[in-house]
Image (cartoon, rainbow over all chains, first blue to last red; front, side):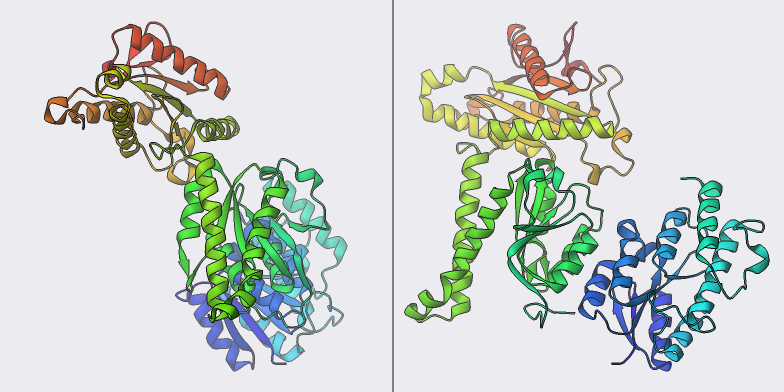
Amino acid sequence: MQLQAVVVGGSSDELVRGVMDLAGGYGIEPVRCEDVYSAVGRVAERAGARGVVIGRLGELAREDGRFFEIARRNGFACCCLVEKGSAERRRAVLAAMEAGAFVVTEAAEIVEVLMDFSGGGGAHTPEKQEDPQGAGSRARTMLSEVMEKLLGSGGAGSPGNSKASSFLKDEFRTTKAELDALLGD
Amino acid sequence: MGVRGKLGGAEREGGKILLAGDIDKAFVDAGDISAENCEVCPNILDAIEAASKRRFAAIGVVMSGASGRLRSALKALRESCDSRIILLAQMSEEPGAMRLVDSSYNGSSVADDYLICPIRFSALALRVQEFGRALSVGPSASLRAGLPATAKREEGVDAAEERTRHLEKLATEDDLTGLKNRRYVWEFARQVIERAGEEDGRVTLLVFDVDNLKHYNDLYGHLAGDSILKQAAVLIRRCCRAHDAVGRIGGDEFAVVFWDDPRRESGGPRSERRSARADHPAEAIYIAKRFVRELEKAELNLLGPDGKGELAISGGLASFPRDGSTIGELFEKADQALLDAKRSGKNRIYLVGKPQNDIADIE
């Protein structure tokens, strides 16, 4: 079955238009969903297919960030763009991270996700992160960078290894605790 | 997406009802609802996923606590399945529920029906059964009638809906004026007061009756009296906002529940202007004064032009939390203010409290 990218957002959204255009170039079938609600229907309908959901964090994290878990259990990877200056991003970022979503801060980074996704054959869906040198590791690297950007230097406990190819569970826990302490509830 | 009616190999649970949202806000017996009868998804996204994968007899969506994207969620539910969607609304949410049922999406509405909560689960199950029966009588009867099965099914559903609507109307409306009845106004006020208590909102109750109605009844007959009541009903409904509850609660007694509808408040309930003098929501006083002005301009139908200015009312206004914390207390206080207004010469609306505040004196 062809890889599918479910792109979430309005048709006038530049990010959505850009990803829709890009996806075809990587052999990925792009499908646009207007919002996270219709995206749920799409991933449920295509459960088990190889796919990735791409959208802005603000949209994908609606309804308490529940979408990330739903996408994960239906075998879809998630990639969400954190918009700079978003005041309510802490909870949303955590929800995304906990469900194994790829969190990026630049639209250009989505290209890497698409490349990895098409090249890795979807092997980096959250349940299948056994390839340390492949897409999963690069996505985790992106997560480290996100944490660094969110917390600034000295935060996250790992400024020196933001490019580290591994992002261990313990480090994640530390990061979450520090994020809680720094940004508050 | 369009997966209506084509669930493929998906699991079938045709007899179950899917409930989405906080069921404690919808059912008085939420704790007793059995998993045999329904599946509960507190998060609407989980409900959309469930509806995409399994077939349900109907989907009940609790409106309270739902985000501002309820319409989008309902559209996604509609796209994901062919089950009937029933909104579970508090009385204060009824205008929104009606809009959703009336709104069109891809040739049908985003929701099929709504029920006013709190209710027992059996009431929802009964409603679902009624639609089920309407659907099941379709094919064989339609063959006898020589009609297409789908047409007969739709006819059956329409008839069931019509019957249900009629029963609801009888239970909640005053048949003379078309306004809500006492039971509805009481329950509506109880719900919005409870909500206002949680959200620091305001609720104002206006109770009024028509001055000298007995005189008109005795002089012109009861049909003339009924005509006056209808005229007063039309005028008060016209003066109030769509989300206010307006009802006839007794012979010649009416009540209006003014409240802060969060969907209409850009700055939240605290943002509403208040009358500094009385600490009542200024908007409620403004509407009451407008009603009085409309009465002064109106001609009594039975008297023709000679009846101009003859139609008058006396009323009392009580506000939560200033004058009482329960619906019973508010009615009692508003009734007392109404009596004071009568004793002071009629044709006026008093605010609760001493010395009496006639709203006509408030700037």
